[in-house]
Length: 136
Image: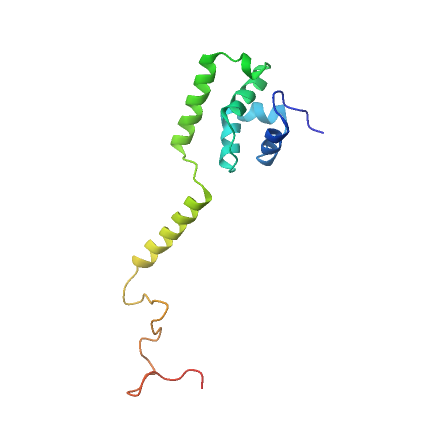
C-alpha cells in the first residue's frame, strides 16, 4: 500500500496516480513542478493549489505555509516549463496531424499524386468509348 502524500486530497491523488506519482519518493524524484506539469499534460485541469500542495508535501508543511516568494517562484517555473513545451489539447494535436498529412500529400510529385476520384491507372485500359470496365 502506498503512503498518502501530505496535502493531497482524493481527486488530486487519483490524478497523480494516473501519471505515475504514487509515493512521496516519486514526488521527491520528480519535484513539485514536474509532477504538476505531468498532471496538466495528462489533460486534467489542476489549480495552482495542487502545485503549492506538492511543494508543501516536499517541504513537510501545509501548502498555505509556503512563503509568497516560493509560490511565485513555483508559478514562474511552471510557466517556463509550459512555454518551453506548450500543452496542446487533443483537438490541437489532431489538427496538427491532419495538417502534417496534407503538407506531405501536397509536397509530392504531381505526376504520381492521385485524388480520390482520379484514375489510378492514368487512363490505361481506356478505349475511345470510355474507360475499361474493370468489374466484368
